[in-house]
Structure formats: C-alpha cells, structure tokens
Image (cartoon, rainbow, N blue to C red):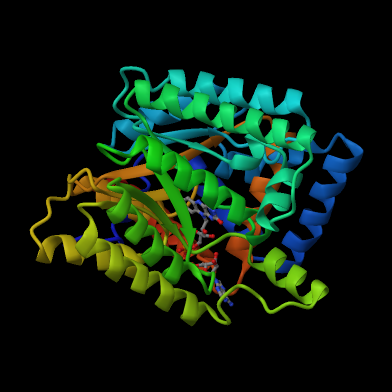
Length: 395
Ligand SMILES: Cc1cc2nc3c(=O)[nH]c(=O)nc-3n(C[C@H](O)[C@H](O)[C@H](O)COP(=O)(O)OP(=O)(O)OC[C@H]3O[C@@H](n4cnc5c(N)ncnc54)[C@H](O)[C@@H]3O)c2cc1C
C-alpha cells in the first residue's frame, strides 16, 4: 500500500532550513492578492528589464527551478537518483521570437540531452514547440491559414530543428515528451506530434504527445489517436495532464466571444482525466502512459490498476511524474516502493523562466490548487523533526 503521508521520506533530502523556506514560499503563494501583485511586478521586470531579479531568485525561483546552468540541474538529478527518482531536465525558457533565439534554444536542448548519454537516471527529455518554432506560425497553422512561401520555409526549418532534436534523443535511447500549450496553437502541435509518432514510434514509443484533459475535446481526440496508431501500426506515448492555461484560455474565449474549450468545472476535468486513464490503462501495450499529475486520487487509480492486473511497479510502460518543488510526498513515497517516478527539473536564467514560475504560482494559488496539502505536509514534517529533537535531548 502506498502511503503519501510519510513526510520523513517525502522531505528526506531537505535540510531544516530548506524545509522552513519551502513552508514560507507556500505560505506566500497561498495569498492570491500577493501572487496577483507579484505577477504584475514579474511582467514589469521582464518588459522593462528592471533589476529586481534577486527577489525572485531567492524565493519562488529557488523552490521551482534547479538553477541557472545545466550543471545546477545535474546536482539535483544526482540527489534525486540517490532516492531512486529519475529526472528529465529542461531549459525552461518560454516562446522564442527570433530564428537566432530558436537555434540557441535547440543548442541548449541538445546540450541538455548530452547529460543523458550513458546516464539511466535521465531517461526522458522534453521540448516546448514554441521554443523551437514561431508561435505565429503555429497559430496560423492551427487556424488553417495558408502560409506564404517564406513562412512555409520557416515552418520547414522548425520541423528540421525538431527532427534533429528527436533523432539525437533516440540515438541516446532517450524518450521525448512534447509539451502541450494553448488551444489556439495546439492543433499544429498535435499535427507535428502525430507526424513524429508515426515516424519514430514503430518499435517502441520514443515520442510522447501531451493531452490536456481540462479540454472538452480531448477524450475524443485520444480515441481517434489510438485508432490511428492501430491502423498505422505505431506506438502511442501519452503524457496525461489536466492543463496549465486555464485563465488564459477562458479570458481569450470570453474576449473573442467563443465558447470556452475547457470543461466547465474542476469536477468535470477530474472526470475526463479519470476516463482517459480508464481508456489508456487496458491498452497500455500500445499506448504507454506518462502521468503528469499531483492528484493523489489519480496516482492511486493507476497504482490500483497496476496491482489488480499484476503489472510490476517497475514496468517501463507506466511513468509517474511531478514537477520539481512540488508534490514530493508523491514522488519519494512512490519511488520508495519501486514505481517508475520521474521529476521535471527545469533550469535557466531567472528572466527567461519567469513565465514558467508565474504559471506555478497561479496554479498553487487557485482554490482547487495543492497549496493547503503542501502546507499541511511541510508543517507535519517540521513538527516531527522538532519533536524528535526534543525527544533526543530528553533521553
Ligand atoms: C510532469 C508534469 C508535466 C506537465 N506538463 C504540462 C504540459 O505540457 N502542458 C500543460 O498545459 N500543463 C502541464 N502540466 C501542468 C498540469 O497541466 C497541471 O496544471 C498541474 O499538474 C495541476 O494539475 P494536477 O492534475 O496535478 O492537480 P489538481 O490539483 O487535481 O488539478 C488542478 C488542475 O485542474 C484544472 N482545473 C482547476 N480548476 C478548474 C475549473 N474550474 N474548471 C476546469 N478545470 C479546472 C486545471 O487544469 C488545474 O491546473 C504538467 C504537470 C506535470 C506534473
């Protein structure tokens, strides 16, 4: 039986001072007014290049990012590996706007990949499509707007970058996750992902697409994708997530006057997520699962399925993944009993990763977010350590 409440295991890698800092950060981001204010400040810092970066660096950045350089991530990777937790590293800059920026992003991603060489602790890699190609082109493609000759050439260059990255990963026996983004660009990302899976997933699923189950249409898409895989005789890799752009999606739908593409409530998203698991798990031979979620009920749903169907915890077809700085109680307790657990370890210069950090803060501030649970567990561990210190002094 997996127990998520074992805080000694969950926070075994944290010193007392790290633990206390994490507690303070979660206390801060639990305050939605403070987060709203800090978000505005963060955008201003980005736009006006203001010198307040150190405030972020010491607080939210330290909680959710491994560091500025790949070497910083590598230290974290080794620490996690000491507890049987694997990692996937990511240069977490968001969309690039120039071809030069995209080439640079590709180079950083290839450099990151080189750490996987001969290192079984880093079995996956990831890319964010708008880091390697133009956001405007993804948007046009998704809206079925014809590209000019010049745009077509830029699109082809982006496909080449992606293929170069995937081929290098496959050469190193590393699997590739493709992040999911906003609905108005995701259509084109899906097309690219399908093309890659058709090409590279003939023998095993090297390429994993991401499905955001807060979208109303993803269950149908999952079924159609599975049919295509059966007919085309290739494997599917599915990273299942709920979705990180809820406010942006709903605000845009309202501003432009179209119905929101997202489920109308958290309960409905939960239902869709659970249904996707019901669909994938009995088909896991062809459709490998990468569960990107901090939701304990879903993790247990998969664990129970595996037990009831005598699937070994170390089965390579099913992975559990959490973000660095979050849900350590799931990560370390699952890994302790032998499940395949992998942490997303982002790194990059503070300025470049601000949009990623804002998403993490927003996610944790929302009423349905995980902050109360994180705070409870951190409090419990702080108390446990203080009690055991008192007990050892008294004995
Ligand atoms: C390893 C990993 C990789 C990820 N990769 C991506 C990615 O590529 N793309 C991406 O978009 N996100 C990604 N995410 C983030 C993910 O989509 C979620 O935002 C985050 O994990 C929180 O969802 P949960 O399942 O962990 O937890 P929960 O706390 O159970 O769910 C919170 C989520 O529920 C949904 N939700 C909340 N309120 C409502 C509402 N009122 N109506 C409808 N839905 C609601 C939102 O999606 C919210 O994020 C990733 C997460 C992980 C752990």
